[in-house]
Image 1: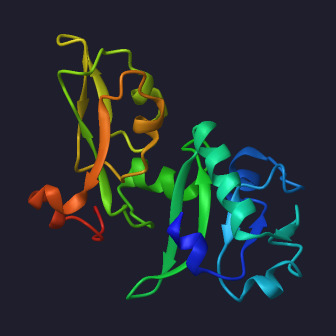
Image 2: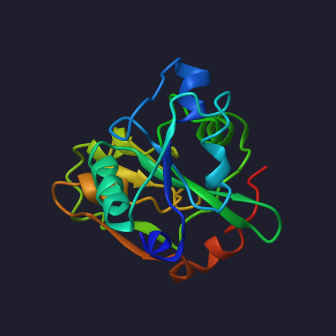
Length: 193
């Protein structure tokens, strides 16, 4: 949520991915799932063909509460970038069923978003094998081992979204700096194709 304090203006908007993949029209602040973070937002609301559901400017406090709500609902927060070096243009609350970036990543290995600076770390002994984290993971980084009756975590696929941490009933996950695992530094910020 630190990005929210650094960016201005903040504009909630309808999700083009959901409209294109699922036919869902988001038409109000209560329904919007995407956030633009650039001065370009002043003109985006005037492009009805792109943002048919509309847009709404918001405050940093309101935006942070909105992201917390989306986290509880199981959405993963993706930071959209463009260019080299990457420039942040927005943040979306995504799920694999309708997100273009997540579908391209999971289906073809095309990476359009950067991983977080943190990665989930699993305390194997604390894991009770309930599988709630596996249901929430949008990156296929978790699977339930039928033999061990515990979760197996692939840190190379982990984007550091923290959804596993927020849903684990026994607090078996924690978020640690990505550089804690030197092997991950070779893949961080690089395409996975």
